[in-house]
Length: 401
Image 1 (cartoon, rainbow, N blue to C red):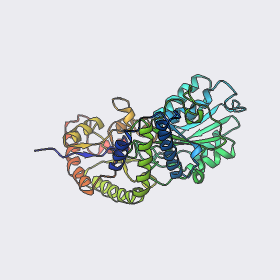
Image 2: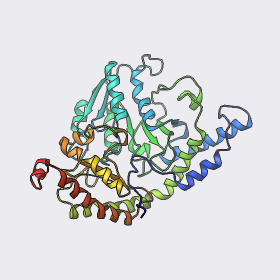
Image 3: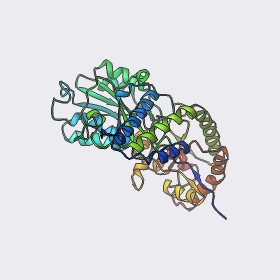
Image 4: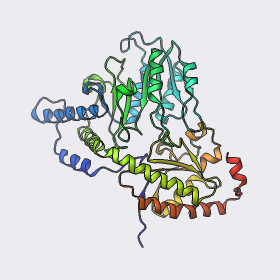
């Protein structure tokens, strides 16, 4: 008997939308270099600029404020590396502000780049978060000073789904004369985002989280904002990112955005209904299930839950045998034996963090699949706990809290 396949790891990556796949297949015949002046190049260039208009318009930006890059990680590195620029030629007068403020629950591409910059002389201040993953606004106010050049806080956390008040954070940053960046990879295309309303100078996007292709992302850079290229050596993207443009990927991103505009609102309501059923079902069928992330201010497609006495990796493997794909946290941390830095930052114990899984729904997820998970998961947790020499029902519950 064939095992059914249920994909619930959409925060890691998403399958291509059928319309995106169709668009990219048709575009494969267009091979011209967008920088070439002949007809082949002009055709590719025209399609890139049309895509730029579409993606920029989706976030309320002007097309000249959008830079196509290779990934969300590259976009984040580009913004942070403003502070690695050793010359005032790129960002005149900006070298006096050599402090970056970010949070403890950012994506590794932000935290590791910040750590690298710290070794080069940049001061990095990390914001604490509460038990739900919301940053400490009072601490942000305390950290803001004349030497702070950038505040970088993600819109939605990739592991627990918690949303931050980016508008308020940006307002405080700008009052201090600092630039504001948000890594919006997990929020882009899943909730309305307008760069003027949320008040950011930089915003990071990625295609493969919204049913587009891998290997393409975009960075919003507000007009007049200091900028220094991360990849040099070419005039592409108006000198802001060297390298021949990924025409196929860019067109795939634009088509994915087009489909998000059509499907995002209804999808969010459907996610919220499935999330409610999933959370309630876990609470009713599994003892001592501890949910992570904010109960209300979070992405409707994301559920992160810990099961004391059951290792996350074991849960993942048993579910995989039943055809259910989930995650133990960020896809970028897969293979690591370290507990989630996000859960540890919320005050979770290492044991609780090790026993967590992330369930993230997508456009093809059905209520029937959620019910299937609820049928399978209790037995998996019971089986793993029965083999544990450390788990004692009730006592572990007290320790976990």
